[in-house]
Image (cartoon, rainbow, N blue to C red; front, side, top):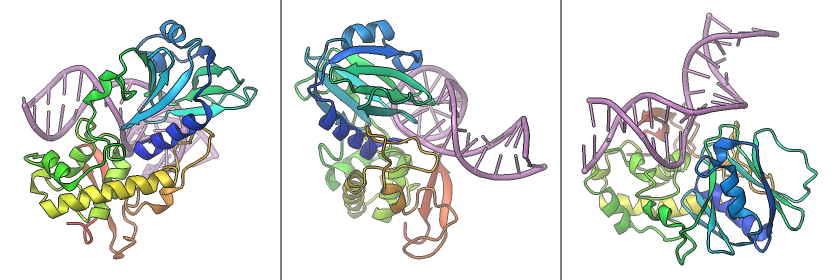
Length: 278
DNA sequence: CGCATATCCTGACTGC
DNA sequence: TGCAGTCAGGATATGC
């Protein structure tokens, strides 16, 4: 379940190992991964291009190419973008796209559930961001997030706080896991109506957002038990060990010892401490 | 318009 | 032990 910290970890791996490399050839074996353009189009746009930059916004990666276009990648639920230095290494099951680079290494897109996708965007702004990603809201790590900003975002919304936190058009990069963790750290229940969040609470939520996301990036993301998430080197993240509420329904709260409550908010499983969070 | 729900998909887990 | 059924969720389309 890659969210902002996982995608940022992947971005950093790409930045270290792939920038400056040129695409020799690509092989597409999973049509759904390239559904936006099709295999032929992707091959035509990528072949002989050199990777020059790696930009992230929310959960999207945009890998800038030397002709001004960008390879856009979204991992969705189960996608992995691996940088395999030994091309002889066996293909993982559900490898849908292989991009062969001029140093003999390969970028491999692996995705059991096939929700993830990649395509090449022509319209890329000065900031390296494809124009169609402008619909995304504020990225808490790239842009920062203040209490005042968050208060404006939440004002007048009748839906639960968690719905706003995970709405990519408002704030980009937070998914189900980090939304619950942020609410716990801010001591606010995720099912509170956004409009009822008071200014001091908005400040706490904004600060918790920056702290949780940057700690998670430092820990190289969260890899759950069933998790597909791995970084470009195939390594797991460590932040799952520090989850306070996510996936801990029925277990004792690490702060107060009361059982963590599991509920469904807008169709998504959610966990919070009924004692620590108001 | 705003918010809720269904959909895509495979693998891990649950229960009989 | 085996197997059917359930759950997981990011983004988007559709429904109320």
